Every structure is written in C-alpha cells, then in structure tokens.
Image 1 (cartoon, rainbow, N blue to C red):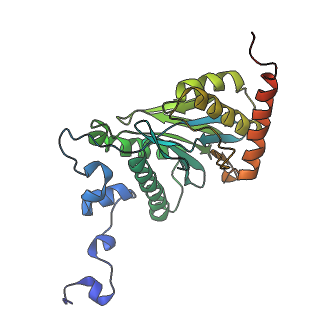
Image 2 (cartoon, rainbow, N blue to C red; image 1 turned 180 degrees about the vertical axis):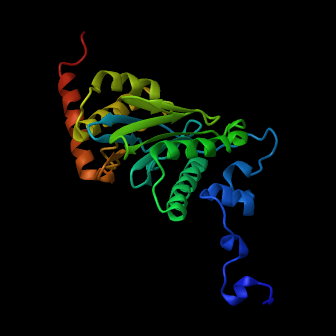
Image 3 (cartoon, rainbow, N blue to C red; image 1 turned 90 degrees about the horizontal axis):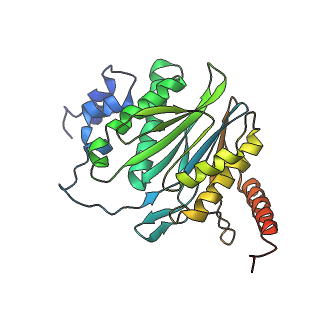
Length: 279
C-alpha cells in the first residue's frame, strides 16, 4: 500500500476533511459527480423500459398531514411488483411519495434523505419545511436530462411545519417547479380519479384517523379506474403504505389498522351494491 494513500494510515480521504457547504448533493457533485442520478449516461434516443410507480395521495388534517401510496409498479401492460413502497420518511417531520420511474425515484428519495441528514449534522439544526421543499426541487431539476428521455420522477412532499405548526403539501413538475398545495393533492396516473374522491371526502379539521380513511378511499377509487394503480390486496394481505406526520413526527400506519379501514370501506361498498344492477 502506498505511503501517499490516506487509507493506509486509517485516515479519511481529503474530500471528507475539506470544509464545504451543508449540501450533500453539492459535496457529491464536487467529488464524485458520476454517482448523481442525473449524471448517469444513457444512449442517445435509447428507450429504457423500467418499472413505473403510481399513485400517491396526501391530505392536510388536524395537526399535520397524511400521505398514502398504492403498492403496484407496472412495466408496460405487465405488473412488475405488487409490493413496492412509494411513501418514505424524508426526515423526522416530513414524508416524500414517489411516482414515475421506480428505480430512479427510490434513488432520489435516498439522496434526499442523505441531503437532509447531512444538513442537520453540518448546521446542527433542522432545515425549515420550505428549505426541504426547495432542496427537493433542485434535485429534481438535476434529473431533467433523464426526464426528457422518459425517465421522469414526480415526487409529492408533505410535512409538519415546526414554525407555523401546521401540515403543508408541495407538488412538483419534471423540471423542478415547486407548487404549494392546500387541503389535498394526488400525483400519478390514477391521480385524476383520486382527486375526485378527495374533493368529495375531505373537509376542514379532519382528524388524522379520518384522514387515513379518506386517503385509503381515494386510492381505492383510483384503482377502480386506473389499471396502473393497485387496490388493497385482501387475498395476499397487501395494504397501501400510509404515513401520518404531526408534531410527534413521522408515523407509519400498522397493517392491522389499515386492514380494518379497508375491510370497513369494502363492507360499505358491498352493502351499497347489494341490490345488484337494475334489470
């Protein structure tokens, strides 16, 4: 091993000892840019077939937000996965949901988590919710080249604003445009149907428990009309991923709670159709 090799002496490489900004993405861009998703080369005009994920919904509730995502990923007309997870904690007080090219989206979420953790370690404090939303916007913009080749990632970001003491929602377009949404929002191929459901079911002052029910119902409605959105799978016991973010932090709803919510919803709908179709 060479004397010049810092690892030979148990020391970190110089990159880790050089003062830099509080951004992990900027650190990676300076020292190993090829690791950033947006810098990954693909053939010109090359059509990449990759699993895609849909549909994410989020609603503002009393004291926070609820975010939910179905579990299906599709590749063309084929179901690529029935158990993919599309809702993740960004940090203790925020959640991010993904729609679009599944592999890149999951990679973007991991990088976003590192970005927020890096900021907290360097600055010794949490980034504001607006600051987190802006950082995610910058990262999406860095992926624009891949998005123009069909590998788009469209996240949905929501969290508890520690300064304003409310839940807030942010949506994005593929160019990194950031838009604050109020009350509720949905992204993905089933979002048109989910938004219709949310408009009917959401109301101000919704409790977190009722918001979970509203979010699950929106996903069921989306799955009813969109083949790329998976509904609750009662046979395999696969339920949506649902998370609540309040001043107490990020909390994922347990499967038994979701099973009860789904069974209650399906029982209501079965009862409503018990009379059958008119002759």
